[in-house]
Image (cartoon, rainbow, N blue to C red; front, top):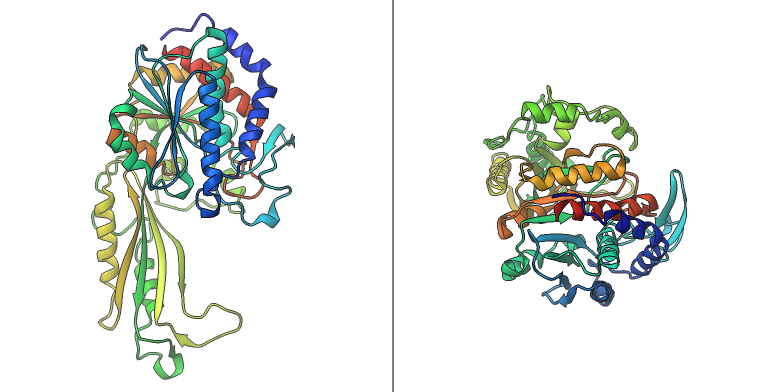
Length: 461
């Protein structure tokens, strides 16, 4: 893994071609590839075909591959490299609601002045079309300079990430031999603190549950039945309130089985990052970190599991007042997992917990909403050190090895189905407004992201 002799030419090519690269990104962003809306199924396919044509135009063997849902785009360069590498991104985007909060139409991209320089504003600009195109532009410049693509590149671009990836795991299983590589690159994460390059080396897993508690066969008058009949909202509230103790620890039996404390080395690394919890909370109108007592904020955000109530409904919630005992109460609850926590055991423990609060006159049903284990990458692979150095050279400061409080199930799927670790490197900023109106992507991040991938390609050759 040594610096490619012609890397500087590739970087110059990227700089000279930035305007053309932005034009291509604008064209890509104009396609309203909203995967959750059946009305946009044709647009999702059109985005896949646009990608296929771009990749074929720079020398990849590229195809649109059908699934029961939206298509995958799969592309390969010629064999013959030292180690195959898979690059993953997604070309579908979130819905745009509420449309009234957009300053301009979400699929009419515009490059405008931002607080820190030029930004491109449109749905999908940061998540994930702009990030995905940093791959493509790096490959394009490499081909232009070298006359051919790096060997043994495998590209997998998905069209259902924003709608739960229902076709992804079957597709990986059915095409495991074709897609297997030594390492996966995922470009769907952020810079640390908005300016420092980062490699995410661990991700929390996720368990989602919806619980429904039912009592009487109708809403009841609280004066006639109050104090006598079971109230499903009260039952549900008691069960949910008992999920955590006064110290912020989750009370489910066996919940912390498989949770590992930070190693001394990782603790030192994370302490040196200067993670500012107050600043992070301040951006959303809060100030006081909560969580387990005795844990530092960055540890709680990245390395500790959670239990959160995401939504709760029941009874009368309209204008005015209606004194009823509701017949039904519902809640959506999620758990973020770390280490070796088992999603199936966490789900079973939660259901047992709720049942313990159930009076004889109430029934309960549960609806599963996904489950995936945490992912921890093996950073002893020399590719991690090589990528870290390459990123440092491009950004002028050392790349951080960080955790992520979020869940990116594809990294776990690559591990369990294809047997490979993932390297998560992204160039988004925490104020890019992904999933929200007026999403944007910093033009400097787009340009330096493509340059970063060119450096990483050279380092891994």
